[in-house]
Image (cartoon, rainbow, N blue to C red; front, side):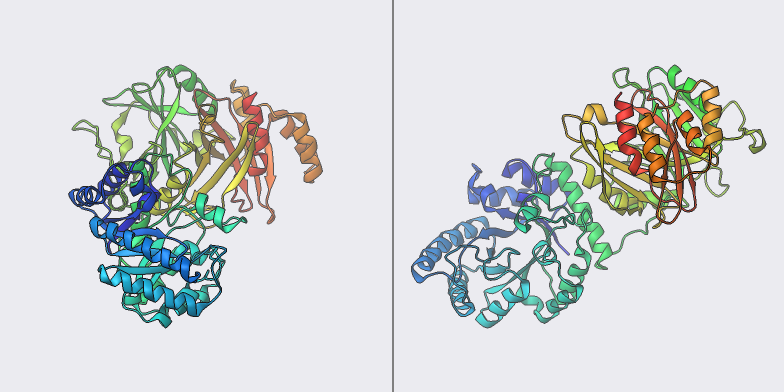
Length: 603
């Protein structure tokens, strides 16, 4: 199906919006009237510019407060419509969006609404234009799609149909059975389909719509089911995005447009309209790569944590540090002294790295050039929205090339050599996202990597609220790859809060904490008040609370009895390590302890 986007969904001037939509790969656009009114381009110029970019103009919108009005007012509406039809003719578009009336002067009379919309359609037909009637969720008298369809059906005019909008339909909390009424609308009478998602929020629907819509797959509405119903009804027009979002209005239009198209491609897959290469869900973290101009602080921390330098890259200033199945690459050829140590890349364990890269490319993920010598093992890599490089790896599997063979030097330690309380692997990686990339990042990792997003949570930081959302390879969060995406409290606070952390797994956190403290690793100091509260909330074994207080260990327990113990190192540059122990099927991330940890890190 053709793909379109409303210009209101993107930031910038009309010319910038058209350019961004075309470069992303859209087939057409909806022209939002305010964008045209504010543009120095004439309707003819807009038409020519769109054509030059390979875009069709699929809809002009919106015309408001038209139907069910007193006759004198409606006469003025017809005069207004005639002028708009002339503009549309010059633009080269043949479909006008008319929203259901919200005026206090509108009359609650379906017969009058039907008669006036039919007269509007008569005038539109003279210009070769169709009228798509849309029920606004806050419409004064018409607020549901089935009500709008009853009026259109009664008018029985060839130039009058309905526009179905996923937000207006789904934001009313419709029962899934309510969507079945779409099958009663002939496909040829569905003139247009507008799509938007939104996070589930308890607020006024108008404000919800104007500020918090997002692209399909980024919110909590079942847009997929709606699209299935509309396509099954016989709709053959474009899938078009209409999103009102304060963040998108300020973010770069080019990046937003690519994110938008990715959402449509993923939506088509989930709705069964088109197929993509199957997702290759990563099973875990092969490595985390840290870049630094001064490796000494990090090498000291890694050694204290029990990592061993397992090899050096044959051609690059990169060291491989290893403990159990946890691997850290320390790259001291690309770091910046201004940022200190930063996490720049993550290796993802994939059963079929080539297939994983193929799916990523089909979903518009930026494919990174392979910067390697002729002797290096080739690795497919893509860039995440925040710039983190993601490599698809098959570590030490005979059926695939092994990236670790690029490193020579010290041999890999034997399992028998690992001390008590050793690190066994990487539990999860947490990345704080730029404020305008959070929703995009969630969609990216869900669609491209096949991860399942968990519920979003708000964490109290001393300077505001942190928004956090985990994604995992297993639906219960107990296995496979785990990523946590955090959103800084505000753009202004981003430089303070762009922390990145790697959570290392252990089977005995108490032993691990004692061992690394004895090796000189500084652990985050937790206030005594926390342990008094912990004693009040949980009944622990004798001496357990004293041990946690001594070592700076935090504790959480879920409703099923699963337990989570964790502690934190000091931060080096922008990177710190968390050491965690999960027991009893615990699937969370210790969110209850986050405010204490964040405040301690501020200090």
